[in-house]
Image: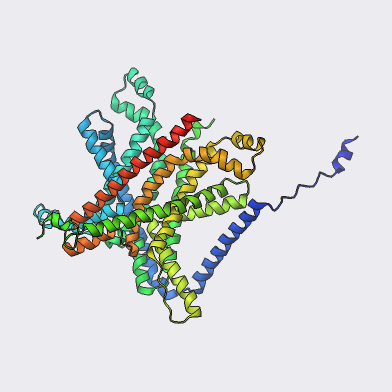
Length: 274
Length: 237
């Protein structure tokens, strides 16, 4: 048989995909999402109110700025604070590690919103004392209180991330570096940290995302972040669109951040893929 | 000024009975959300690990939405959204009627959605940890899909997913504090009311924090017991 003949033979027809239960369920589920999406767009267009939009859009942008700066400032302060806490947690000094454990346990075991209330409203109970040491201006302001509460909270979480990441690096790495005559600090800097940070990247990213989402609660202590502006806009207009705008903005930020972290992770672990 | 002990006593003078009621609300909300969220999370994990791309996409959309939005916003969206939606629907038939959505139910649904989106990821990674051979072994001795799932996969799945789920339970317990924002009298809202009336904010919010800590400690103890129980079964096999 020549090659020309074989070329004309038809390939067997593809087996038709049956409409089995998972496929029907999938089609229905996607259908529900598509209808929900179209409904949402239709609602937003149908109820489009230019006055409402132009009145609140700048405020929303300002609120978004507040949310982002709150997150960035508290995550940075938390990162600085987490280093001594993680160190205290890992030392052999029982007293120090007990204090660090208590700190971490308290801030991870109670809701962030209760911590924010404790600091913002609770500071009022110590007004005279705070006034006498000249700190009342700090605790009177809801913005400073929010940063204070969030920094302490994220420091506890970040300390645990840091500790987990450092402990995930094998003991042999420390011993090897010591055998080469590297000091503790140099070992940390050149050997342990590069390996630990790969492990810590994903939890750190999740922590930042959690902080962005968690920052919505500062609206309850009257900070006008994205959520605060949304609540204000809703209470003035009773237009449900205001909440949907906020939802879309939050979703977009979190999704961008998540994808960025995924990208960074694949980028810095290239050498580990065989 | 009253002494702290009077403020924290049981009865009309003190606030302990109100706070205890708040604890009841918080715990019952968390306990009601748990089975709902777990069942939904399991279904979504099933969708996300299926062979069917449409089903996988639908599951991923769900997770993206409920993991990407702040819990507080989800709560408000559901509370006000359902309220306004139902209102419009009811007024279409009976003009002038008003609808009030139960804040406990709204809190349960919102927290359940959030919980299930995280739980689905936990279940999904547990599904991936179970080798294919387990399914094949089940089929080869003639078990249908449902029975393979129930008798072979599920017992192993629960063991693998347990640490992740217990983490989510602790997060859920803390997230219930958010329902105070939609007017449910949980621990935090009772503490807020008490501090408004007595001006002892630090005391009452401190007590609220301590109660959350105690609940977390009790939960960790209970989780430890469950893990031991499940571990024992493994040993006995």
